[in-house]
Image (cartoon, protein in one colour):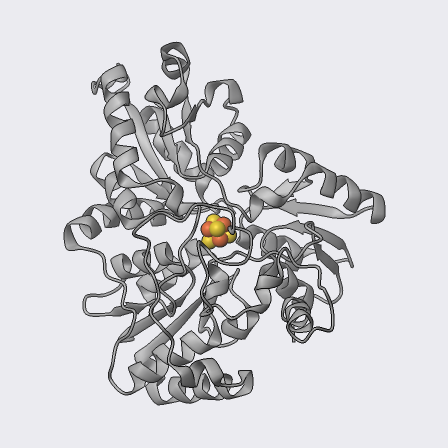
Length: 422
Ligand code: SF4
C-alpha cells in the first residue's frame, strides 16, 4: 500500500488522525460531496452545470479492493486489444497499476492519437483530458471517463463566454490589423487544462494549445505570429514561462474576467506582452517559499524541483522548475544518491520515491492533499466501466461536438508539432 493510501486507511480505521488536508479523504468518492470533493480543490467554486456522476452500482461500492483489482484485470483480459487504459501521473496507484500508458497530459494526448486500433480508450485522468483524447482519437473510437465528476478546478476557471467577452474587448482596443512584420495584435494560447470549447476558440482565432512541457516552444510560436499573447487559464504557467523567456512581469497584466478591461488600464494593456488569465491550480498553489526554506534547513544539499503551475516566488526559490515529465527525467538521470524535494501532486511524488529507492524523495508540502478531481477515479469506477465494455455496453462516453472538435484539433495539432525542449 502506498503512503497516501496507508495514511488514508489509518484515518478510515481510526488508527491515526492522519496528516491529510481533510479527514474526508477517507470517504469513498461516491459518498455525497458538494463541490469538487476532498483534496486541494475543496474550496474552489464548482460551476453550475458541471458534469455529475450518477450512482455507482452497489456491487462495486461494496467490493473489497482485492476483488475490484481482480475484476479489472479479468475485464481487461476479456477485452484484450479492444481497450487501452491511459493513466495520468497524478492518478492514485490503485488505478495507475491498470494503465497501459502512464504520462503527463502531453504524452497522453500523443498516446490517444497513436494507440493501435482499440475500440475504446478508458481515460484515468480528468474531463478535459478525455475530451482531448476524443478529439484526437480515430473515428469510431470511444473515449470513456470512469467518473464524470472528475473535472479540473483550474480548467473551470475559464469558460467560453468569459473568454469571448475578453476577446471582444481586446479587439476593440487593439484592432485586428497585423503590424509591419505581419504579426496580429493578439494570439490566444490555452493551457491543455481547459475545455474543448476553449481549444476550439484558439483554433478558430489563430491560436494554439500548450502543456507544461512545451509551453516555451509554444510561446515562441505565438510571438512569431503575434504582438502579444492572451494566456489562459493558468496565470502561473504563463508568467513563469514568459519570465524565463525574458518578458518582464511588468508587461504581464492579469485579466480578471469579472472586471471591465480585466481590471486594467488602457496603457497597461497597450504595453502588454502576455495577458494572464486569473486562474490557478489549487494543488500547486499550496507550495510556498517557506516550505523550500524548511526543506533546505532539514536536508542540506537537497535538490528542489517544482512544477511551473507553482507561484512565481516558489519557482524562483527552487533549484529548477519543469513539467511532470521533466521532474521524472531529472530524478531518473541523477547518478548519485540524491535528496529531492518535489513540488507537485503527492501521488506522483510517492510513486517516484518508490521507483527510485536509491534517492530520498519527498513532497515539499508536508500535508497529504491530493488533486481532488483526479482522486475521484477509484478502482470501483474503473471496474464498472470495463465490465460494461466487456459485455458490449459503453458507459460515461465523452464526446466533443464535430464543429468544436474541428477547430480544437487545429490548435492541438499545432501543439503536438511544438515539441518540448530536450
Ligand atoms: S492538479 Fe490542478 S491542474 Fe491538474 S487536474 Fe488537478 S486541479 Fe487540475
